[in-house]
Image (cartoon, rainbow, N blue to C red; front, side, top):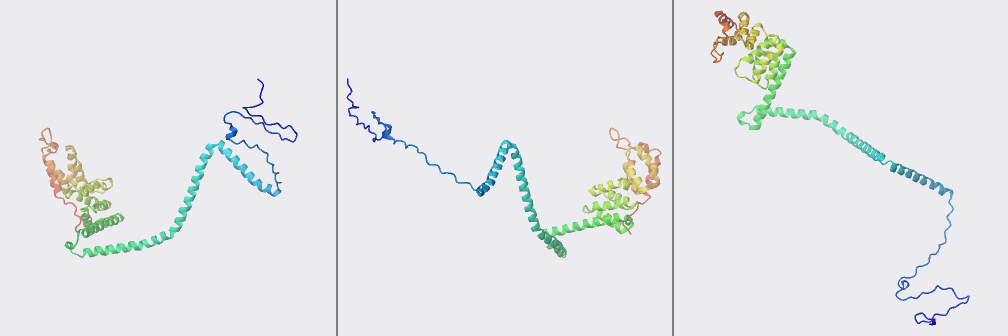
Length: 338
């Protein structure tokens, strides 16, 4: 069938073949919806004329060189730290810590410099404040002591008791220093009485017994023995006095009579007592009587506690009795009486 030169029943447009007719893009017509009907055709790209670069002047180059050098240095540093991450991780905290320490030290020094005048003023004012406080306390104590006890309240009575205790302790310490500086003072009966009196007080007994131990022989040891044995009740003072009497230095300063009494108090067996009887007969005084008198007891040993513990002393029969009579006849030294 010969072509009817139509496309979908439409006659083709006439073609211009002259030289003046412009070239046109062919138009394609097809059934359905064309993309060209929905979206506009893309605009063809055109080359913009390039702007010739401005000639670089010598001053501009000079100004650009430092920035280029800085950028180059920064880039090299960045690359170095990037290749060695552990290095800057170690160095950075150290640098930061040193900076913080320097800053803190500067702040502290500045603060101390500002507060130093205040410290000087306070230190200069402290003695006067302490003296004023001491004077006011002394005045208050004097006022309380002048009042009858029944007119005082509990707080005031406690203040007076504390003041008396503190005064006694001070006296004991002063007496100890005095005796230690001059042990020959123990020959003074007034001092002996004061030592024996203060030894009974728990607040002063420690210093006083130490002062007794420092006295010349035989007074110091005799005074300590007196404190130890004059009461049957055990106290801290009596126990300390006993320990001081048997101490190595005081034991060497005991008299013959006191040495016998101490040996009799530490003996345990019948044979030890029998060996001490001749010495007690010769040198012992009344201080040896208590340990000798207990030797007359003929019971206390054996399975039923009916046997004689000191059977070796029964022969000769009159030896123990003669020793007891001898020590009773000798009076020990008396201290504290003028």
